Length: 500
Image (cartoon, rainbow, N blue to C red; front, top):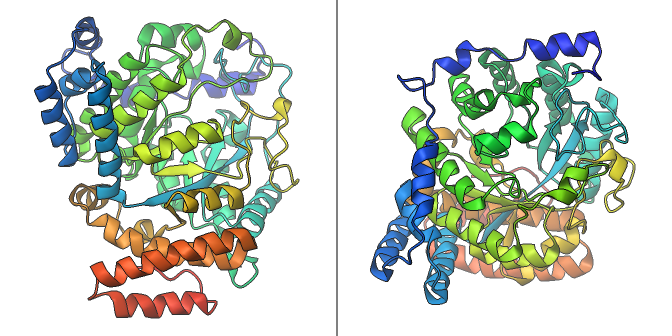
């Protein structure tokens, strides 16, 4: 903590509430991530029996969570034909649970001051080349206005460094500010309807504050479940150096009433096979602890960052073929969960992964603090951001591509406002019922966006897709069709924010 002032040091020293770790431990003081068991599973490198693999695939297709042992079997598959079957199953599972929707969002970085010193991160406290900034509420409002009024986003993931200037009160106020923004668009009104949060682990009392202010999904990524590597990457004298404080972040979120949680691994820090098996321990622990698993799983892959020499020495980088395997395996292992692939990845990689079970992707993204309102959506400033993006294309271009691939972009946030979260959403996802609601709301929100923001080229491709979607809804959901068609016509006439 040598580079921090006394206020920052004192704040960091008091972040961790030890009692809110110890209460969740096993009776013998151990954690739910079983290192010895994972290493034992990884020692078996034999090619599994095809009949066993196909039985596991069928279990995944019935939308049941796989055991850690079953996932380990799939990891060992080498036969190209079996992998093709697994990839086909991954795409089918996505269609069963989520249909052909792709949810879009954008990250909004509001503060990059940080008391931590993670060796792979451009925001680390010791990085003197990083330009530090914590946005004022007026600046936050301008960012939200640009995202809702110029780009047409309805859903954000807001991101903060771990620092006293961006603590829970600041986070809560920025969420209120974002929700308050309304901007006139071409035919309607632009507004952010869902604010998800990616922030550091917090104690239960602080998480209750965020719950009350209306945050959406709460994301905390473990970065790596490999304890030895975790200790090397996160200095012991920092808040983030406490592995267990992070490991039980979602237990505390559930206790605070936040029942929509997102997990993730930063791929490239340790053996990706170990990470997947440990993450499955986390998934199964959540199901045991609170009856529901993660609403989303994210797959950030290490990318270059300014003045971060460790990245150049790192020999754990995940290649594209292995990254594809990670996504397919995760879709089979946790079939109900949303899978998020971000603009860290190249356009080519995102096109490759979309048919394999991905449900969410961002676009028009910028990870520079204050970048949207300054008109820098496609101009990356390495000294102002955490890492370099692989896909900086505008939302309009990306949506046109998705539509040409047969995927309808959904801006829907209805489920969260109708109470379809937590155990409710999990039941609907497992039975395929949520897809029926979401298809309707996807069409309504897609029509909104096309009329308010789309270029003529994207409008043409999008309207052709909507025509197919409307025909499918009329054929498959005839009882609800008359009511839905009335709502669709209202949207087409200029009304906004109508949902089922």
